[in-house]
Image (cartoon, rainbow, N blue to C red; front, side, top):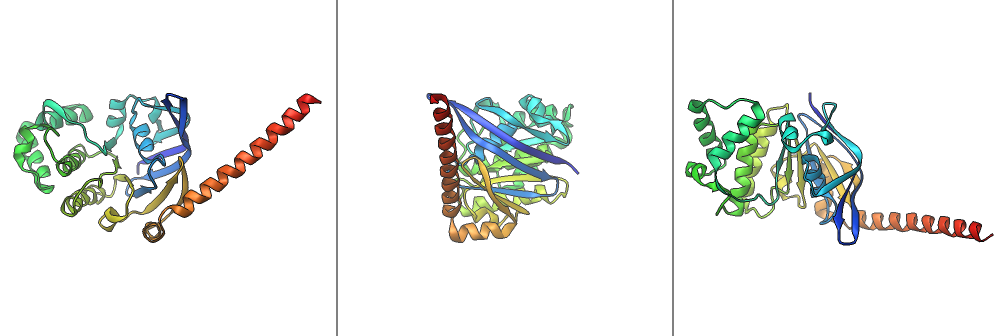
Length: 275
């Protein structure tokens, strides 16, 4: 049983006005065999969480911990995190001109496993993985994501996930930009991965439509860099009906109350100084 544990994670990014805190103390535990959905409005910190776990240099961890089976993930390089069992499917997969899909996948598999896959079985594995997501095998000879449609890029991410078979897959808005057929195909791929029983999924999404195909064990609502609510699949159903407004409003009221307390403290200090 593998465990990905996030404790009091705080993350900042550099802006023209200085460092800006995005994640403000996130606690989350994902165990193998579980599917967790992270939902929330734009700018709530969902993607920041994904990229921080993966090790994107844009994000600075200011405090907190991320561990995988007790190992300090934050002390690892990006490639070490991948070898430890983490996988990130990006919201906007990048094009890599000049590198074929076949070479990319084999190189990645070799790096993860520490040895090259056997050629006589690898080509068959790749073709079967592509067939399962309705990608023509000729895509294997094309440059990574170059000229791919949005749906083809997302399906290619699922091919990577299935072939690399990590302990935990972090899917950053994998449903973004997909039509109904592509959404169904991608969801089937995620379900195949999680049905192994010893793999965990952290699924980030704005909308509940992908959850019609992928049933989460846990749903977490992100607002302003914090987990504002959590529950089971029924929470996603409530969000579909009610939206995020009540959570956003509650966060604003909490921030206003904290600011009022802070202002009061500052006035007391200023008064003490004058006397």
